[in-house]
Amino acid sequence: MGDVRYIPFILLFINALLFTAGSISVQEDEDVDLHPFIKVGSKYYLFAHGLKMDWFGAVHFCRSYDSDLLTIESLAEKNALFWYLFKILLHDPSVWTSINDLAVEGTFMSLNSGRPMAYTFWRQNEPNNAGNGEDCVEIVDNDGIFAMNDNNCSIQRQIICEKRSPLIAHNSATKSNCEN
Image 1 (cartoon, rainbow, N blue to C red):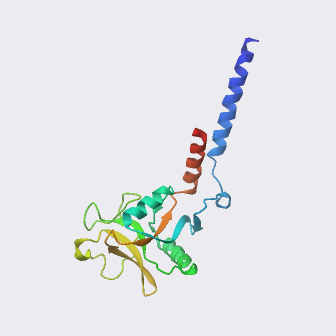
Image 2: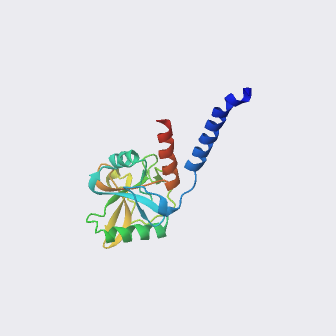
Image 3: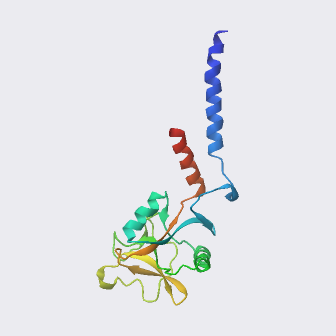
């Protein structure tokens, strides 16, 4: 009968184990609600309509939503994203990306990954570091074609944030709920 006193602890352990196992399960895309983020292609984006900030403010804004400033990593992602931007009639398509050469002039890196860009689509004659002060990369509408341009980081541009991963976002929310 002395072993009966351990039953509540064993049940508590099993309950915690089942709760943890359920919280880290992979969800199907249809089940993931990441409002205010919208799925476009294979990523989730937050479109901060009408809000303009300098590059540093844009980075901070995205981080406040547990996300990163936009990084386009493939032609497929570019096509899906800009088709969506045309669809929602974005009136000023100039948006900041996470790409910059703040650390080493002429070496453009992703702030999100710390690595060189995986995919580029520079505007003609860019990057040019005009006036020796263009260290942050924006995407601009170049006669109906979206292209990358280096610009001064203090310029006000629109913001598109991207979630790192729906699974990571789900787990971090679950973890913070467990700690409260």
